[in-house]
Length: 482
Ligand code: HEC
Image (cartoon, rainbow, N blue to C red; front, side, top):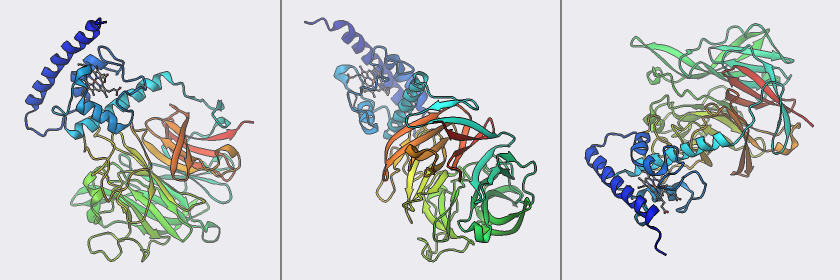
C-alpha cells in the first residue's frame, strides 16, 4: 500500500518550489515595513496550489465548507501561519506578518462569499413581484421613484412620510404621492462625496411640539479651504416650509475637514428627551480615538442641544462633553430597541469588519486599534481584532456588505417577523432579516439582493416595511401576501 507517490510527490515538489519562492519574496521584502497587497500575495504564492478562486488544484479546494483545521477565523489564521508541512501546506509565519495573515483571512472570506453568491440564488425582485421568504410572502412594491439619492425615511404621526435627498432636499410623500416641491428653507448643505442632507427624525413628542430634526454636512471656508462637518438642526414644517430653525449641534470650526467621507449620521431619540447621533471618522481613522474631536463618535445631547450632565465625559478637560462612545468608524445605522430601550448601531468596516454593536455609555469600540477588516487596497490594518478595554461587535460581516440603516420590526403586518432586526446593505444591495435571541444573533436571511443600494429601512405606521434605495433611486415597500 504505497501508491501514494503521485499526489504526494507532486505536492512535495510544489511545496519545495513554493517554499523557495516564499523565502525569496520574504528576503526581497527585507526588513522594510512597507504594506503589501495581500491579493497579489495570494495570486503569487497560494493560487498555484489552491487555485486563484480557491477552487483547488494540487491542494484542496477551500470552498467546500470543510475545514480540517477549523472553520473560525482564528483556526484559519493558524492553518496559514503554522501550515501542515507533512501534508504539503507550507507554514507562512516567516513570510507574512500577523496583520498580513489577518488580511489573508479576510481575502479568503471574500473569495468564498463570491463563489457562494454565484451558486446561491437570492431573489432579485422587480416592481410588483411576489417574493417567498422563509417566514412570509411579500410583494416588492415601488412607492415613488422621482427622487435624487434618497437617504432617510421617517413618518409623521399623521402617516405622511418624510424623505431626505442627499443633495439637500427634504421631500414629503402624502398618501403614496410625492409632493412636487421639496420643503423650502431647509439648511444649505455641503453636498460633496458622501455628505449632504442625511438623516431626518421626528421628535417623540411631535404631536405637541412639532419638531423635526435634520443632520447634514455643514460647509465652511477655513484658511481658503472648503471644509465641512456633520451638524444638526431642528425646525417645524408648516405649509411645506421649514420654519423656526434652531441649531442642535455644531462642532467647533477647527474640527471641520476637507474630506468627503464618513459623515455618519443617524439620529435617534430615547424616551427621556435625549438625542443620540453618529458622526463617522471622516476618513481619518486616528480621529476616532481622539476625544477632543467630533468625528468617529456617537454623541448624546438633550433634544434642544444642551449637554446632559450625566454624559460620560462631562468635566474632562480633554474631551467633548457630547461624546457618548468613541472608536466608531462610520455608523450609518442607529436605532433604539422599542422594548428594551437598548441602543443598537451598525458601522461600516473598511474592507471586511462591518459591525453590529450594542452601544453602551462611555465605551470604546476600538477603531482603528482593533478591526476585523483590512484596507481597501488589500494591505492590512492590524492583526488585532480584540483588546482589553475595547468593545467587541455582536457580529461582524466579513466580507463587508456595506451595512447601512436598520430597524426593529414590531408592526402588525408581518407577525412572524416580530422583534427581528432589518439591516440594509449598500454594496451587497440587500435587505437582511436578523433573528435575535436577546443580544445574540441566531440567524440571518437575505430577503433579496441586487436591486440597488439599500440605504434605509423604516417600519411605517401601517406596519409595512419601507426602504430607501439608491441607483436606481426609489422608495419601495414590502406588502404582505397571504
Ligand atoms: C505547495 C502547495 C500549497 C501552497 C503554496 C499553499 N497551500 Fe494551503 N494547503 C495546501 C495543502 C496540501 C493543504 C491541506 C493540508 C492538510 O491536509 O492539512 C493546505 C491547507 C490550507 C488551509 C487549511 C484548510 C483547512 O481545511 O483547514 C488553508 C487555510 C490554506 N491552505 C491557505 C493557504 C494560503 C493562504 C496560502 C498562501 C499564503 C497557501 N495555503 C499556500 C497546499 C498549499
